[in-house]
Image 1 (cartoon, rainbow, N blue to C red):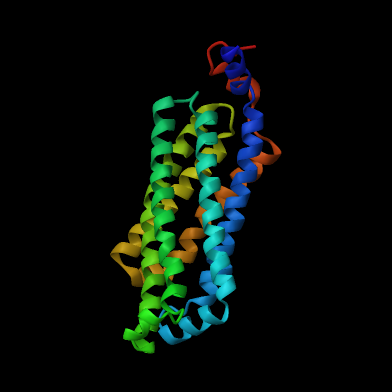
Image 2: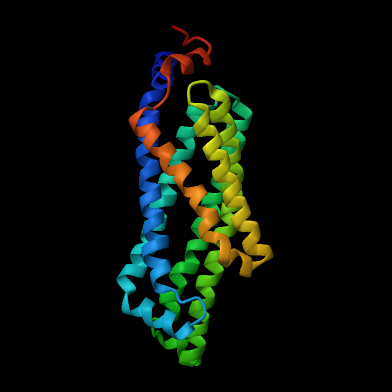
Length: 246
């Protein structure tokens, strides 16, 4: 009975693809909201007082950005499993390696999200913070947002490596179109370039980050929509699985 059930589940890659596509879209929306409509709007990178004022004036929005990031990471764990199921027929070991890279990224981003939340704790006016003057607290809050940016860059190194592996597996699969694999590979290279530029030359990173991240984000959106609308070529997927050939 168990073997029959497992085989039925494995014979439904289209369901996995549809669910994965929806999860991917949630990740994109939640991550985009937290980055573009919260952090980008409320952080003044070189003005601690302005940043503190914006965050405290829009504290509910700042907290929503924190929550949105958590939703994104929860969905990312589930999506990691789905990509493993969809791509392990190509190469199980590489698919597993991609899982490990992605889970490291999720763990780093989860802990790093504390740097986002720390700003409202620092600026919240608790009694134990009266040992610091307002200017010091504002500087610490801005520092926490900068630590978040660097922590995010570290996480993206691992996600970039996962994207390279996922792009290769998609390209070699035969049940996804090859152009998707190329796009995902470009996405991975873009994330890696962005992160290492941030670490090695922040001034250059500020100039090129938007241009680097654009070719990173668009392939992810295309892949998410493809999973929802088209999915996988089920017949070719089954050909990769012993015992599931038609």
